[in-house]
Figure (tube, rainbow, N blue to C red):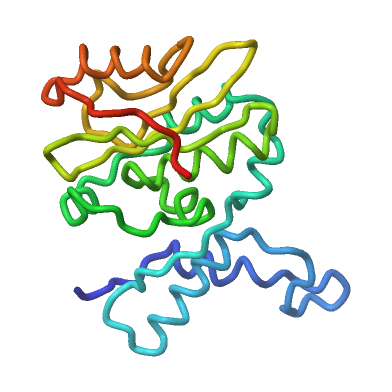
Amino acid sequence: MIVRQSPALWAGFFMCFRPNEKEGDMICCKRPVMKAGYITLFTFISILLGCTQIPQWVPFFGKNYTDTVSEWKSYKDVVQWMEKDFSFDEERYKKYEGTLPPPRTSEETFRLRSGIYIDAASFLKETLNRINPSYDARIVVLVFRPSRFNHYVCSFKTEGHLFIMDYGTPYREVSGLLGPYRSLDEYKNFYEKHHPLQKKVEAVVYLK
């Protein structure tokens, strides 16, 4: 792909310079430059060096996982982020369907904003317990037999009730914030009733 030079690129380059107020000369600007200006300047230099296509790498300027979670006050903030920013990774799901891959770290899940059952469950457990250890967030395993496939969700407790978070499934009927429940058995009954395919759950237990 051939890259055309545009006025915007030149404008981004000259954002790094300002006139010397006393002598009228062009000097290097000592003031902070907008991050967007750095990206434009980076692209401009790449073109000067003979690059034939724009680099795919773009710096990430958003807050990291730790800083973001430190500002969250309750499980409601987690739900809001999961429903707004997190997406189910269908490609990864097809690759590992029926198996249990090593879960992504919470930092990686936050950065990629996607994942499957074990990624979402691990992320939710760590995040909820960071916000409030009294949530006692734990990973829950739904055991299916004779199939070897298991499913993983996250449970937590608040105000004397048990809730389930499941954002690692393609089936909307059983995803999201679920509950309140009095026990895992009550959640098991809900799952069997509403899942479009899995009508029999062998057991629902906490992951040790």
